[in-house]
Image 1 (cartoon, rainbow, N blue to C red):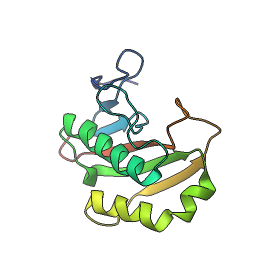
Image 2: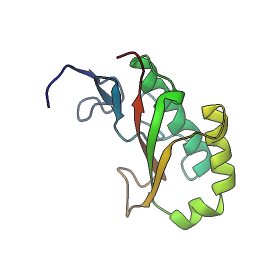
Image 3: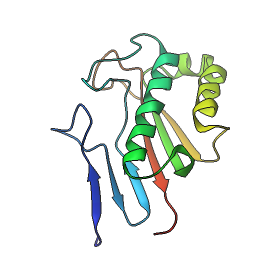
Image 4: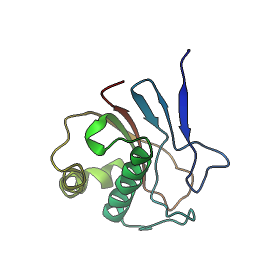
Length: 134
């Protein structure tokens, strides 16, 4: 693959993982979890709080590329308890619509995993965005 890459590596895990990579008009975000700037879990045991904080982290990384939530075209949500997620889906997708400003018109994948990087993390969200004008 040729072309310039812009790499953002500002998050609490910057020593081991980039927050995202932009090449051309495509932005690929690494999976975002519910942690603060110091890497401490936000909303342990509360999936709604974690959804809200993860999307805040997604928006913050996109902003570093000059992009917004409206630029997202694809997301993958990894959860540790898909049944628990689905029981609260209406509330959780309501939070997502609030963050996006509307129900997002994006492709989506929901996957259950055995575990994330910390047992306190209930979900991780990975996104792809496209920005115009490139």
